[in-house]
Amino acid sequence: MTPQAATARQIAAPQTPPLPQAKPETIGLSSTRLQRMSDAFRREIDKGTLPGATVMVARHGQIGWFDALGKQSPAASAPMAHDTIFRIFSMTKPIVSVGIMMLVEEGHLILNDPVAKFIPEFANQKVGVENNGKLDLVPLARPMTVQDLLRHTSGITYDHTGNGLVQQLYKESRLRSRKISNAEHAAMVAGLPLMCQPGAEWNYSRSTDILGRIIEVVSGKTLSAYLTERILAPLQMAETAFHTGEENAHRLAEPFPTDPWTGEKVQLFNMLEVPVVQSGGGGLVSTSMDYARFAQMLLNGGELGGVRLLGRKTLELMSSNHLGPSVRIDSPLMPAGHGFGLGFAVRTQAGVAPFQGSVGQFYWSGMAGTFFFIDPREEMFAVFMMQGPGQRGYIRDLLRDLIYAAVE
Image 1 (spheres, rainbow, N blue to C red):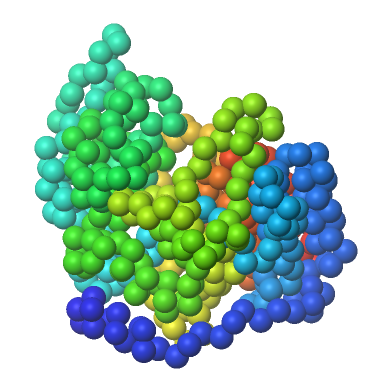
Image 2: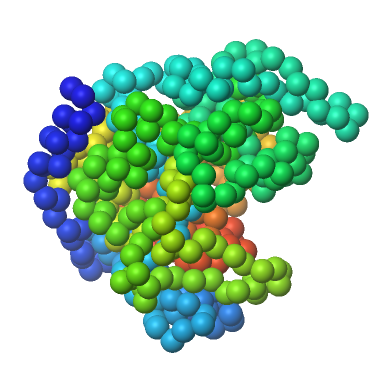
């Protein structure tokens, strides 16, 4: 079946029902302890740590808690709302990863395919090795694969995750421009050296942006059109896109202009602006309820309300650890007791990490403070939204502890 035929079949699928709501105690959650969670975030808001937030906890297919706290924007009086729109940044990555795996399920590619099969510029890429303050370029030991992109072992990097010589080249490039196409972006990345040999290290990176370009090449559609037709429309995620309209200007969440902890300027992209680049790694805006529909689909093993996006075994593969013992991991973004799957971090040990969670839990987050996790063992998911870049690490750990304290 062609991608177009599959699209037609899915759009014609029955409308998925809204996510049901339930009293916390009926789904094994403590309302008293969930209220403590909301109270803890209100204290942070009162201290000026963040302008506002939404927090949702669902279990056994029902939403047990959905609270909107504080204000949408520090510069306005509008309260935070259940339908506030947020920049979700890297929470775009799991959606794009699902999009790639849908193409895998249809036989359009396999995980071991070289990236150069779809984007020829990657065929001539080199690895940059630092040597006495200079960069030596060496050939690839093996080609970069689609699996490498999904699990961030491609050798690609981000300019903000370090200050090595390769990352300095990233900073000097136009990769951050929102006025280049996905094809131009991919060609720029391919023209820069890799941080390491493919498969050697876990480096958080622009890999998922390259996956977005592969989706365009294989499907013949823009990334926006593909995601809308294959994932967002079938799941009724109508508020999720690479921008939002002027009619929604009153619904946008904004950060403090300066970080309350560091005093640094905070500059996030304009959600009303239509970008040329459709960043598969961090370009989407969304709402709590939209992302909750995506999360429930993941928790259900690839299906929501009669609409199946992925097979159950494909989701099992995606939420398994794909970092073997030979992969070097040295990043504050990868907590102890965790690995990384195909688009998500995965908890591999009950202990070690300094926050709560179950073995098998998978999750990811966004640079501006958004966060979600899926816990198959507890049949639970959580979606948290805020726009507070400097506070995201602390708030994520706090959220995990408070939610798991409410599980009965």
